[in-house]
Amino acid sequence: MTEPARKMRAPSPQANAQSPVGTWKLHSCFMEDVETKEQRAVWGEHPNGWLILTPAGRWIVVQTAEGRTTPQTDEDRSAAFRSMLAYCGKYRIDGQKIVVDVDIAWDESWCGTEQIRFFSIENNRLHIEAAPQRYANLGDKIMRAVLIWQRAE
Image (cartoon, rainbow, N blue to C red; front, side, top):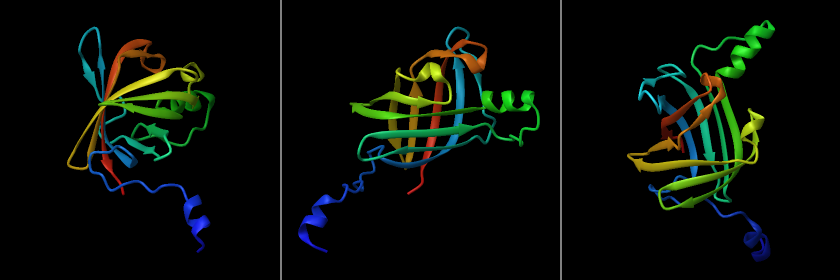
């Protein structure tokens, strides 16, 4: 490989145990009602999900509830929509805060918003807390999401 070709490669993620850059599998998730402080595992005890943070600054996440089945009716498709979350955007890190400028989402109301997440990393687990916000899929209540992701790389 020539020297110019080597320089054109995208940078590889650094092996840094405290960096959120990489691929993460969802381990657990609960939602906390900001008003009542009630905590619910709305995605089930074994939710599904992947989170990818690229070195170039792209955040991609897809989450689904456990136990989903193949939709057969419009009602089933509506239920499937309510039991998922997916969005993508450019992210920036400011201390222990990740800000995602959403450019595509399963819910159009998220497009053009900034999603704020607070994070910490312990033993290859990424702990994320979302800033409180209104969730249309959860009765339009103001909720705070708390997620734990396992490093998959």
